[in-house]
Amino acid sequence: MMKLTYTKNNVALEVVAETQKEIFAQLASAQEIFMEPCCAQCGGEYKFQVRTVNKMNGKKPETYEYPELVCLNKECRAKLSFGTHQEGSTLFPKRGAMNEETGKYEWFGKNGWVKFDPNAKKDS
Image 1 (spheres, rainbow, N blue to C red):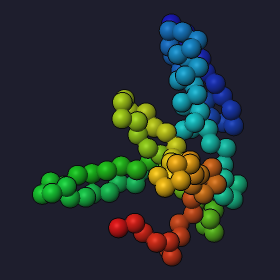
Image 2: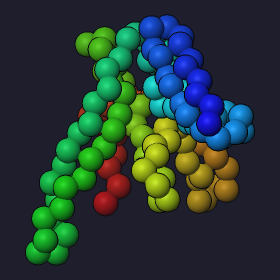
Image 3: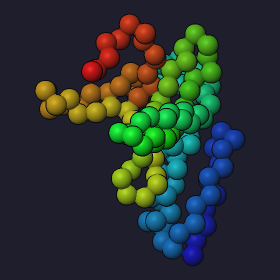
Image 4: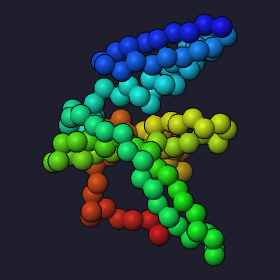
């Protein structure tokens, strides 16, 4: 069993695994979520937030949680949203998606950081 503590910018990550390869994978996954340097839209600081939304699924109410980083700059307020992998309970940053029409990967905002646009057209 090996244990590694990695510290950068006042954030300490600790991972425990059997092999170097497992430690590397765990550290890479943790860094992708917990060590975003700043808001990519304005360079400002951010906070971790989990939005909770209650929706009806037929007659059954369901609760959905949306983890995201939110810029603290009041003029910016951009967000970086996270998805959940189908297997396990790990997260990934939603930085872009495949455009079905063009077949090309398209980035959201700046490296996934998106500002709210009240005039943006919503999909039905």
